[in-house]
Image 1 (spheres, rainbow, N blue to C red):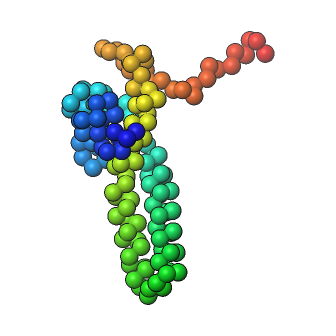
Image 2 (cartoon, protein in one colour):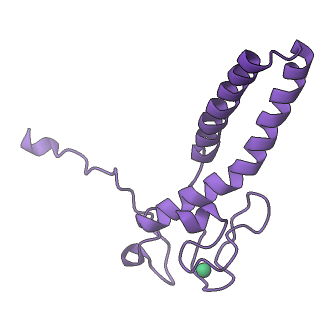
Image 3 (tube, rainbow, N blue to C red):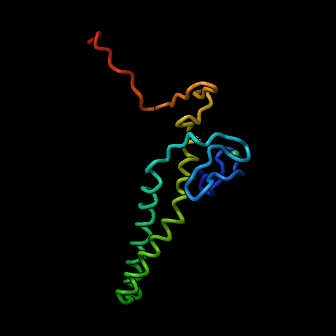
Length: 136
Ligand SMILES: [Zn+2]
């Protein structure tokens, strides 16, 4: 997770995880670890909102109690701070979540479930066999 947090490949810690701002490289440019298996989906924005919300709301309340600045200052400063924090944190949180998926061997990061030269079968840890009605 710490390698992903620093935007590096979770396998080697050297290659860049992202080719663009939030575009994950298909494979690591250094160790060729396949990174296209990642399924971060909506989790990074969720955690970013959770973290930034706690920081900004706590800081806004503390500043109001300590200094009581004019309303226009707060209405200008806090949204800008929130947007800046979101933009700064989003790649880091996404990288950390990809590192977590890699560490837990989720979504095709497990070498045992990889198939080379054939169609890839995604491993779903929550998959359950359908109930056999003949036994009921
Ligand atoms: Zn690598």
